[in-house]
Length: 541
Image (cartoon, rainbow, N blue to C red; front, side):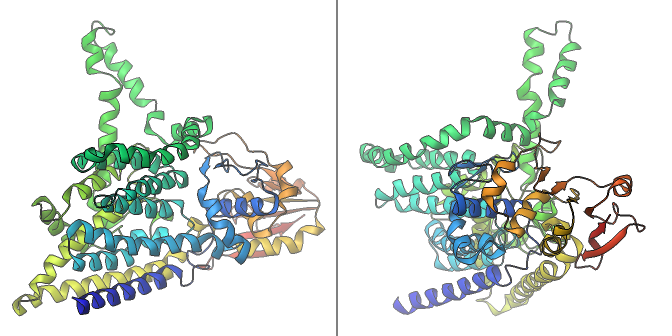
């Protein structure tokens, strides 16, 4: 037993080392560039360190206004020590997420062992998550959702441990609550998971309900600020902008269909044509999207920032593992089927309420239970290897998994930066040092807004004094994508550039795209994308 246990620990450590290398190596260069959300998180942490206030001058907020998306603020506080020690750079923003990603690889081992009762499936789960395209994508950027996923997994694991020791019930609730302070999606799915677990395992909790209630009381108190956040105008506006309920099309359709009845206000018209019958198909369609083969195995998320080219969220060979694993799950062969079913069913709910689905970002927690199912399927296949006759099947599958993994690494490190440099705002880290060199000689600098939220990237890379910036911070009205931006500070202006504006200006430095800066302009410098095409052109007047 001791020898087997030692072997398990050695293999788990090896998997964690692999997970660490895949998540930490080259973190400051890959992804190539820093996206606007990462810059916002970092600059707000920097602003808090310098002034005790966020970019808009609010004192230590729990929610950050940012681009009008009102980000839950705990990740900003998590990265503050990293910004303090490492400086305002990509390492400081991304390293915490990478570490929590490694932590989730460790957690899935214990979750899988607890759920399936088999250390082998625990090890395979950890290995598959360590190399998972879905999990790697969000472990290598400053993604709040990745940290929230860690705490959801931790909360579920603590709940499973509470069967034997009720003190873990409070830790479970606290972990799930922390996930809700980090990211928006858990605010829907974390309470449902916790209540679902209580209902599923009520026979274990009811005999100890008084003790359980006492232990949960402090967590309930800690949830009070969150309740006020959820009910605040900013959070509500953000949900309204993302939710498909903001689409007036179904409402117009209801009115049209009711109008075709002889009595539009009659009970029949109202029962057949209402918000439930109009929106339910949308929700169900969005929900099912998260289990489609197109999303899971072929092309992944439609948002380029959320995936790499030519890759699904899982490797294609894992479709077989999942199919076999689900058969294993349906037959009830797991030690704890109910937890896994609950997690799988609840995970996409928050994402399914939004208009852009399937969304790998908002449904990231789905990767953990599905990986456990895939691991169970893989374990079943490996059992065939005990009979040498089946090695002709097993070895090619393992080789295919290895090939797909190597292909993914090629896509991530070679193809991704060249094909989609704009997905990660590539070019700002090279542009801003040039900007700092040139800008003293001009009365005004105009920077294109063709790239997402340029103001925050200039603030970030220039390490602009937050105390000086805060009085200037004015967020524009929300655009069609439900975001605002800052149009100017200091001598900088951020808007699209026209040829007429360049011709009419004197003493102005323009930094724009090749589409905005004509070849006839006095171009003094440029920044190129990794594929060699110009990202920014510098033109003086």
